[in-house]
Image (cartoon, rainbow, N blue to C red; front, side, top):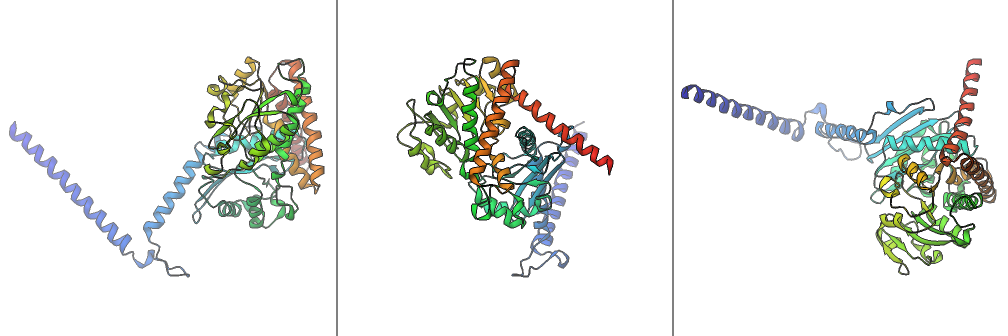
Length: 456
C-alpha cells in the first residue's frame, strides 16, 4: 500500500514539474521570438521614424478595445428597445487618443435627434439611452421639431485633453451628423468643445451652443438656467394655496446642487428676483448660509475646474461636505448637476418642500413616488430644463439671443402652467402629466411617418 502511494506521488510531482518546464519553454520562446525579435511579417515601420510595432502591441491594443466596449456597454443594448426607440446605438473607440464614447439616437419621428454631449467617468450605454429618451420627451413637450438623442465620452474631464477627445469622437460619429443627430453642450462640454466638434465634422449645422462668432447662442449665455428660473416663478404662481410654499420669489429659500453653467446662471436669476440662496455645492464641496449667500461674490467660483477653484474656497459662508446639501432646510432644492442623485436614501433626508429638476434624470422613480406621498412637489426635468434645447432651436432657426430668451420664457411658462394645473386637479405626479402630453405628440408623428412611408 505504501509502495502504491509512493508511486502515485512520484508521478504527480514529476508530471507537475514537467508541465511547468514545458510552459516555461513556450513562454520564453514567445517573449524572445515574438516580442524581442519579431519576424518580418509582423514588423511595420511607420513613415515618421520607423517605429517597430510588434504583434504583442497589436494584441494589447485589441484587448484595450475589447475592454473599452465592455465598460461602455455594461448591459446588452438590445434590451433597450421599445415602441419609441432607440433607433441607433453607436459605440466608438479611438486607439490614438483612447476615446471611448457612445451615441444613442432614440427617436427622430419629429425631426433629427437633439441632445447634448457630455464627458464623465460614469458614462454607459444605459445612462446615455435614458438621457436620450428624456430628450425625446423634452423636445415633444416643448413642441419643437426635434427628436431625442444623447452622446457621452467616458473619461475624467479633469484629467484629459477635452478638445482632443471631442475631435476624435466627432470623427467617429460624423456620418450621423446633422441628419440624425444635432449635438449640443452638456456636462463638462462648453462652447469651446462645441466649436472643436463642428469644425472637425466640417458642418456648422452639426451642433448648437456654438460661439457667437460662428453664429451660435452659447449655453454659457444662461439659457437653461434662465428657463429653470422661469419654471420656478410659474410654479409658485400655480400652487398658491395648494402647497406650503411662499407665494413669490422674494420669500423663498433655495439650495442649488451644481455650480456650473446651469446652477450659476439660475443663482443669478433668482438672486436678482430677491430669492435667498442658502446653499451651493459643486464637484468638490459646498457652502451654507441661512441668511443667504452673496451670489455676486461667489460667482467667481462658478465653472470650477479643480479643487482650488471650488466654491468651498468662498470664505463668507460655512463650508459643508458636498453630499450634505440635500440635508439643508430650504423651500426648494434644485439638483443641477448629476443624474440619479435623489435616491430613496437622500429623499428620506430631504427637507425641501419642492424639488425642481434642473439636471437630467436626477430623481429615481422610487424616490419620486416617495416624495409625492410625502407631499413634496417634484417638477420634472423634461419641463424645467428645456431652456437649453429651446435656445438651441432658436439658434437652429437663426434667431437672436433676445428672441431666444423670449421664446424660452413663453414656452416654459405656458408648459409649467399646463402640467401643474392638470397635476393638481388629478392629484398625480407632474411627470406623468408631462409624459402623457409628450407621448401623444410623438405617437402622432410616428403614425404620420408610417402613413407617408406606406404611400411611397
